[in-house]
Length: 255
Image 1 (cartoon, rainbow, N blue to C red):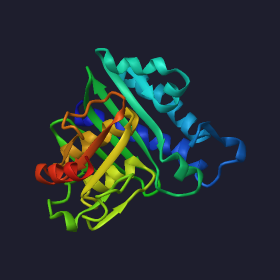
Image 2: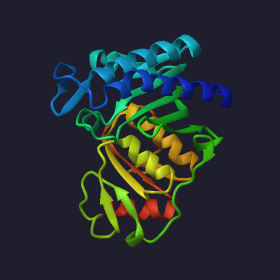
Image 3: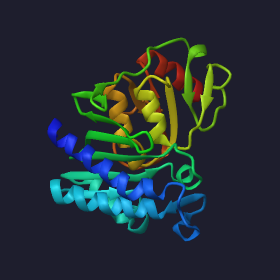
Image 4: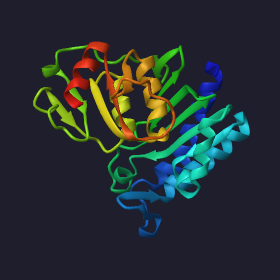
């Protein structure tokens, strides 16, 4: 994807967030929030934002769509990621529980996967209106300015995001969980976090973020050392770190 095309996608994402997501933030009726599965909320913002993103992106660029809400209704849509061609991977509101409860830690995530490889990724944080974009081999940028992961430091100076702290919490400076993978990736790419560890790997949560992290200079891999791909990995784990040495140290702790 060319930079001018990526800029057009950024404009589309921002417009959809402005029209479909932000007006519903802290303004949802009780009938606009429901539980689609145990402990998984969906709101009218998720549904409408995914609908508009899907329509506009495919009209302008073509390709198939694998969106979180669409796959929930039709799991067969996920098969597009295993076939040749262009696929838009969408999380219309990452951090839906935060969004539904008035917490501003939510975001729109879009990834472009071509022939199984993630070639572009966008994470848009609607409340401050900031967007981080990465193109494969071309770097990662926040609103046009290059971003870079944190420098490697000793474990006891690292801050990170882990779901189950275990042995990690006693060895690093600080651990937290934000309820939004997108915000973890934003903080990784801009050097505010050193590492993040994820389970239940769905492509709409991670395809864009992994590319952004790598293009910002970080190391990303499944916990067993295999490379991440934009396919569902429900039983595997993903580890992000600023460099190979810190990745290896963290993997030993977590594993």
